[in-house]
Length: 74
Image 1: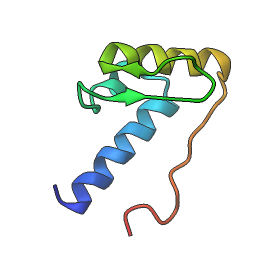
Image 2: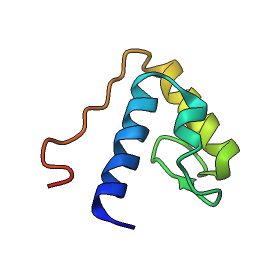
Image 3: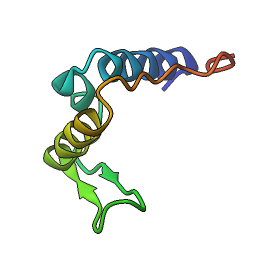
Image 4: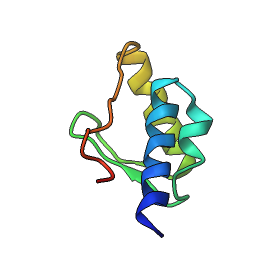
């Protein structure tokens, strides 16, 4: 995958997160994705786990906005 493709995917993921678009976020993830955090007792896996992880974070932090790093893609 070319660097520009990766940058495009990263921008889509950040845009979906910041728009609270669960399905837009999940569709860019591999079906075998795994999310782990030290604040949860077990990892979240697959698309269903990613949906749950996303919703938990948005519930806890409804104003959360994730900016992309300025050097991303350079």
